[in-house]
Image (cartoon, rainbow, N blue to C red):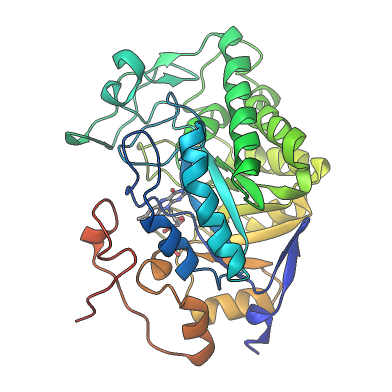
Length: 360
Ligand SMILES: Cc1cc2nc3c(=O)[nH]c(=O)nc-3n(C[C@H](O)[C@H](O)[C@H](O)COP(=O)(O)O)c2cc1C
């Protein structure tokens, strides 16, 4: 198929993008412990601005929403001041950038919480896996179930973060509802055992994610808000699948479509695993949504060309390939080989493996 499809412009709601290659959100853990990016982030994102759309690394909406050391936030003025030159650098290079809004829910550790408090979740069910603390990788702490009255406060935190994202000069926001974090914890019946209006039925489990989208769309307009889902992934927190992933996610997608969201971004299959095509009909999900669709998970140049030319997706997000190849778009255009950055540079550290590469 012609590669033209991948390199031509498209539109995600009100966001016009110059090609169909998105940079997937990538946590790089190089901010300080107050969630403030260092100036290195200006170069890092600026170098990758030829992507049609950059989706930033997951960015905490509040201190409570933090589950990993050295991740950035978007809830204080200092954080906004550090993000502003990042968005300027991307815009100066003709790119577009949205910030991924993150609340980790139960995927946190008491050492990362205000006053050593327990992390919060829809239900008091401990996650598996590890989170990254100042003392290294540790299992997530036992969470406490949110009281119904507390939920309005978290919605307010999302609204506040969305407002600050505007001040920082982003082009929009992506609501992180994937990978085992708070919104997905509400959505899946495996992690949500509530008996109030936020638990039980499908409609109730989708209520909180939908209220979050409404809150940020109030600030941005729905056509500058995207949302990320990972219906088939259990990778982070050993989060068991929902008992009816297709039905649950299609309901949410339909409601998001009715709200006129800019795009739906889906990690197809198990994160870093197979595409799950035998278990889940991504096209049916996409049809339920009806708007622009960004596909992700293990794509390479050829699969991306095929997927955009065949109409499988409107845009393809690349994660790991963007780590070692800031110029991924140009490399795809010229069919140049890609560089695999060492995994040890993924999280934490300085310029090496981030903005500089000792390619050997
Ligand atoms: C180092 C690293 C950090 C990641 N951080 C995030 C993140 O902050 N938010 C998110 O939604 N996904 C995150 N992911 C998942 C990626 O966005 C993407 O879904 C995954 O890497 C699969 O795409 P790929 O095969 O193109 O790498 C991360 C993945 C990696 C490797």
